[in-house]
Image (tube, rainbow, N blue to C red):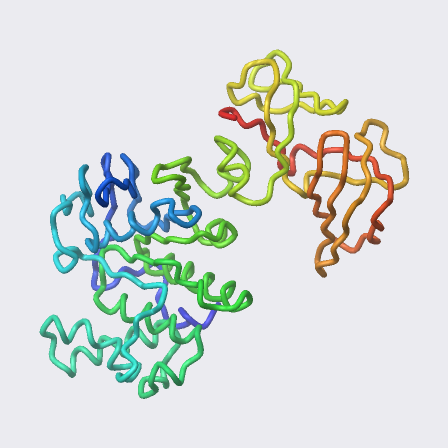
Length: 370
């Protein structure tokens, strides 16, 4: 178990509270003539971690700030735990937020930072510090209470920010790009800490990131946003394996977008021809004829021995060794392909002729709205 929740009790909600749902009903946010969020509707179920995912400027952070009450909706309705909070201020919503910058007070100790919220709400200094000590122990920071934020690592500062948000025991916890200031290895560890904490305390969490790998790793459900609107919602697996359109296919993980010819439906499936290859796939409601397909990099097989019976000819143009995997760029009859091979196979040198084939179960899907 990771350090953050070594002392956390499993399946426990702070102070006996039950987790709350979050619901947006046709919510729009405008800044003058600019629409930052456009007619957005979704529900975050109680006790779930839902990620708002998308590129910069898509509206995800504005949406999070509207949950917090830091921005007010121009139209529509926002409910938390079934209560209409659309016009309530941030102070009147039972919500806490962990900011991208952590926003710790540099002149205060770790303990004082975490105890600040209860103190402002009128809790006695002794009780506020006791509440803060409990949360610091919960996330594995016991013994660091007297340090200043500048004496902590980035990961430790992030944990202090989480403890400061948790100490108020909110119905909903919000994260705004919480890992963006951490290095790659620490990001992986801290995102696991956040996920374990959320599950052990049965918290309702809305989490914003532009990192699709981060979203896939921590989420029960993902809301993909593009140009101020929702492009697709679903579980990580649904979004990765069944993208609704070209944007989602390209944004959620790497994907090769190829063109194929779809045959008549045979139940839920149909035959698709791609450059001479024929594979059977769920048709997902697409009509026979030309279709676009999302082909994941590890669903492409390369054979440099010429033994593949049915394959597309190609040539390796670039090979990169990444330790656990090889990454290739391949010039083929169906276009330029990005290919990933895992394991300890001998690298294929650039300039080598290869036979390209597909393994559909590893990630080949028709894009119905292409």
